[in-house]
Length: 407
Image 1 (tube, rainbow, N blue to C red):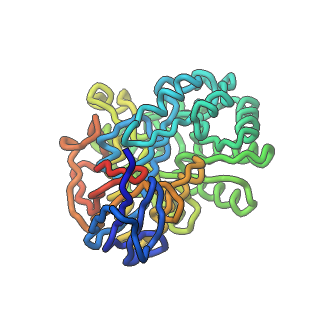
Image 2: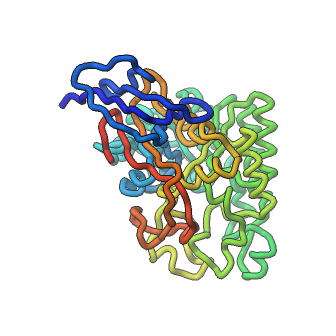
Image 3: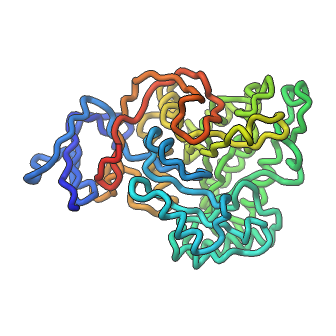
């Protein structure tokens, strides 16, 4: 069925640093014009009633295809981590890519090594042909520097970015928290925050050696961010990301052994949290992602040390990002560079911006709508959010994927 042209009027367009009044025309699934002076016959008109019109969110590095949560959160594309499976073969990648149809784009991230074991390169070329948009080391890093060097060189030859988890396994083995007063008071096994910077330093040396582009999925410490800042100043092809949890929560959130706040990497000190806020303001951090990893009671209603890390983040990503705007850390335009523009570039998809010719993946946002995070009412298949009970503002009210309304 051929889509009717769509004209969204009376909107506040997020196509620059600040919202501006305007309209947008969609034809054949793509953005055909901004502020068109005329529209084709038969065009459907939607009145945005002054709401923000933004590119659909591209959530980089989720651990499950959880469409109800993504649709609630304004996420039109999800880049799926390779851990479930794992995604280390062409057939698995192809099946994962079809998992979102018809109302969600899923972009599989291929496992860098067979079984994510860190010892033998996976069939990366075949997985790219099957639809992989990047490769990833999964929940842990590749400890063997020789294997990591080969992964980076091979991925670069295929024009793929390698997405890296950065924690030194020798320091973090058995740890469930970051060294500090809270971990000591709770009697939890902990690891020094420097475990992150040590892992980043090795991989940056390999990037300098190979020239391969990399993305550190989550950088959460001041020392790690300093390394990223220095690497960018040298012109190395490096990106890094973070989740709202590491921007808004510190290790005090694990008090009372709250397993919903057990994350990987673990929550850090207040000093590190403030360093992360500074880094998202100064442009060191490139991508804001949910880290969506829904966990049921069997994984979370356990003693803290036995609970699995992870949080359901897709539904709160947009609202918490809008909170960064309201608090003056970033502008609306910068928020959508973090949520959509830069992830699109990393994945090589023709979306992520309100620009003529781009895929019409769009969301309307009531940026001032108040609501309260409630773990018992979440659309995700598990409600393990560390933000349970928090009042927030802003939610997606309509969504389009390739010009087709999906919500």
